[in-house]
Length: 310
Image (cartoon, rainbow, N blue to C red; front, side):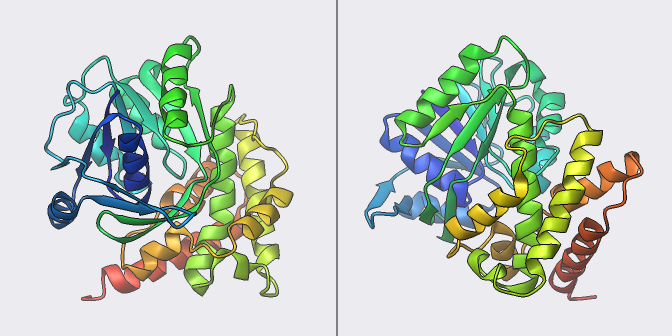
């Protein structure tokens, strides 16, 4: 299969290396010229959980490259870059291509459907964990699961083909008839963990050992559940508090993606997590003090390094 991957961060490189190794024709595109140059020179390497390293020389282009002849386009950019990336590629992706998103946060599906049309969007959610050490060099820190599903009915062919190519690359993949609920449940969990890890600089497993932090995380979840009900979203899974505890234990050594962004001085996905919950809550006149508080603190933290010159 011919696959274009937009975004050469930790997840983009992980999926690119695996998909290339399983025999696919893969092209990476990225918006950082220096990273593009480094990956061109050194290729992509992924250190797997068993200590073995996948090395792949994967073609990579700057974001001006076209993806006219690909069968599958995987969006792996940060959620705050989805709008710009979709617009850049609105006329550079062939009409036959399936658009697959495995991104974090809320709102990605709506953006991609508006640009490419909902009848070709395969929605996905992955709990695969990885850490980017430098451009193209990734540590696979957690092998978990990926869920995909169609935005519309009668998308079985696109969904099945996307699931099959990911399975052949070694990922554990399932198909859901309620992938929107899966994406929302993951967003709720991320909204509970990521801001607190970014603010405290603690790894996931350390959060539960600090008095009061679990109650804050549960508060975020309870507010998110109220908003999901108002939006007529059926969460999958629906019982989020036990899930949160299991994920904190399973991902104990991991740094959340938001903590990684803060430590590297990058913009975070707070607007697409807690910020999205807050905005949807306003529409339904639901109070979300935990989400408001965390979103405000992380936005302030962002400002301290993104606007330090002021």
